[in-house]
Length: 427
Image 1 (tube, rainbow, N blue to C red):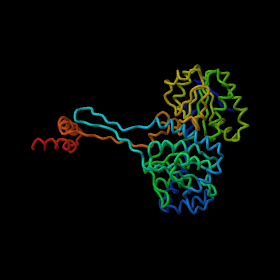
Image 2: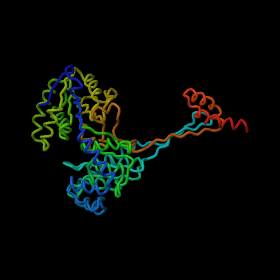
Image 3: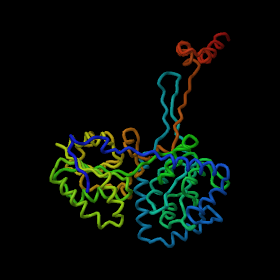
Image 4: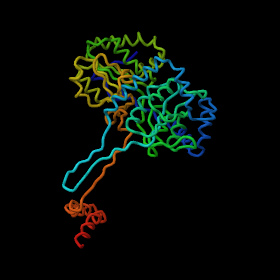
C-alpha cells in the first residue's frame, strides 16, 4: 500500500531515500575495465561467453544481420518507429546551434565556433527488456549535431541481438554495431580494442555495472549522465480521474523496484481514490511484482493545501518526469523551476515523451534536474571561442592587460601583450 503524507509531515529524507554504497560493484567494474585495457578483444570474448552465452567469432553486426532483422520485424511496428524518429528529428532539429561572430569594438572580432564530436558510443541495454526507443533518442540528436560516426554496443544473448533494436539502429542511422554489453562494453568504447574504436563520448542507460563503468571512465571520455532509477511526480487537482493518475504512476513503477512514483494533490478525495486504484491495477500488470515493490517502498501521496504549494514541493524534489494534471497548466509553467521533462494537461501522459512526442527521454534523475538538462543536440557538440585583434586595437588595450597580469603576479602574460606594441613603436 502506498504511503500518504500531508505537506507538513513530509520531508526530503522521506522522499529521497539515500543511495547505498556499492563498493563491491565498483571493485568488480574496476577489474573488468583493467582486463579490457590489457587484453582487448580477448577479454570482450571471455565476458560475452560468461555473461551472454555467446562465443562470438565476429563482434560487429553485419549488414546481412541488420537486413534479416528488418525482414523479420513487424511492418506495422517499423512504421511506428519511422514516425517516432521523424518526430524526434523535428524536435531536435530546432536545437541546432550556429557559429556566432560579433565586433564589440573597432578592430576586434570575437566569436564562437561549433564543432560536432568526431565519434560517439551508444550503449543500449539488452537484459530483461529491449529498448529501440533508446536507440532513437540517443542516436538521432547525435546525427543532427553532425557527429561523424555513431557506434552502438548492446548485449547479444546467445549471439543474436534483438530485431527491434537493430531496426531502430538502421532508422536512426547508426554507423557500426557491436554485440558487446556490460561494463566491458563501456571499457571498450572508452579505451578502444583491436575491433572497437575509442570514442569521444558515451551515452545511453544501463544497469548498475554499466553506470559504474561510465563513472569510472569519465575523464578519459565524456558521458551523458549517471542515471538513477526512474521517477514520476504527478501534480493533480480534484477534477482528475483517479484511475488515470494511478496508471501514470505505474508507468514508472513498473520500470524498476527502485523507481519512484509520487502524487501531490490538493484533494483528499483524489488521494484516497488513487490509492485504491493503484491496488486495483497492480495485480493485472505483467510486471506486477516490480510495480508492487516500487509503490510500497518508494511511492508517495502527498496532500497539500493548494496547487501552488504542490509546485513548491515539486521544485524541491526536482523530478525526472513531472505531470501537471490540472486546468490551464500553462498558467503554472513559469513557476516550474526544476524538472527534467514537463507534461502539461490531462492528455499528456509521460509515455508520450518516452516514445513518440519528439522530446528526449534521456533525463536527469535523483534531483539532478536542479542543475542538469535532458539529452540534446548540445551534448554532441563542442564550442570553441575565437579572438582577432588588429594592431591598433591591441595597442589600445595592451597596457591594461599588462596591469591586470601584474596584479596576478603573471608578468610574462603582460609582456606577451606589450611586446608586440613596443616592437611596433621602435620600428
